[in-house]
Amino acid sequence: MPAICIARQERLLKLRPFGTLMLRLRLRGRRFWNEVQKRQQPTKWARLDDRGVVPGSVSRPGDILTVQVHPYALLGHQTSGWMSGYLWAQDLKLEYVDAPLPEDHDRLFAFGARDSKMPRGRRKVVRLPATQDERDDTSLKLLQARVATARARWPERAIEFRLPLDQPRFDHTPSSEALRQAVLLGARGAEFASLEQGEEYVAVHIRRPARTNEIGPDTHPDRWLTVEWYAQLIGAIRHVEEFSECPVRVYSLGEPSSFVSLAALKNVEVHLNGERDSDFVQLAAARLLVAAPSSFSFNAALVSRGAVLVRVPWWHHLPNEGRWVHMDSAGEFQAADMRRAVSSSFLLRPRGV
Image 1 (cartoon, one colour):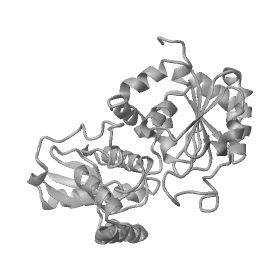
Image 2 (cartoon, helix red, strand yellow):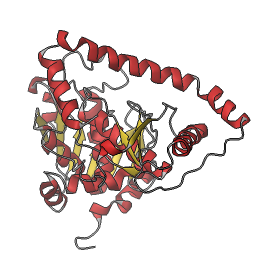
Image 3 (tube, rainbow, N blue to C red):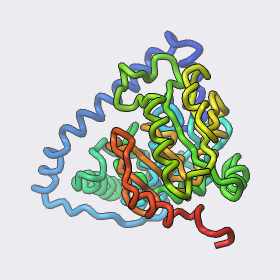
Image 4 (tube, helix red, strand yellow):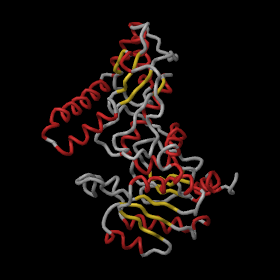
């Protein structure tokens, strides 16, 4: 679906919710059908295997892959959808033709820069089935089989293969460099590059609701971490030599009264209700980023070249190597892991290296 149409639908949903009832129902219907297809995946593959289908990926000029991100999700969710499409396109050896995200109003990401020379109307559109993520080895095989079948049916036509709504992907880390380049080429690329070369600081993201009734301690106890939890974590970070005197900047949403205990800590600044895109590049440019249980700061961690401290478990793959450090539910991490992240971080190298 063209990005301009998705954006228009989003505005309509906010302004005329009753008038968009059919659109809401279609989205729910798609999500329901996707889950049905995922449940049927073992049976589908067994049938193809019995028929002797040999899946494989080959590149064919003119064929492209597109993806529909959820039009009403927040930016972090939509960016995850973009990365899923990017990675499935690589696996299927298809050219990835993306579009700006509906929530990316000011072009934080330079998505939509890649486009095919052939007008889309001249392509045959083929919808790919919903599958489990890449950890199920039959997922790629099913998608490859659908691509091969479509090419055999329309051998003379270029094809636009469309991934379903929110096609899952567990490991987004292979897309980190593409995501970083999209930020550097986006509207805040110069600001981001300048921040990386400027004053060193620790950035802490605290996930709080961006929309009414979105997230809370009762509805999302696995994602709602208290201010006291973060205060204890900042104390532990202060015991790391490289960060003992480093300024700490906390980014969140809400009332100042909810963050008094953090604001009282030495050399800690609390930044509340800031401009979203500015917060993103400041998180990504930090010497050490403490990511919240949030796609927003996880995506900033992918863009980053600094050390990253992440709480496990997560709903996506989290490395525990290089510049990435795991911490448990109590906010505890291994000193040896932090030393390794410090030495691996690009931003901690001498300037000019």
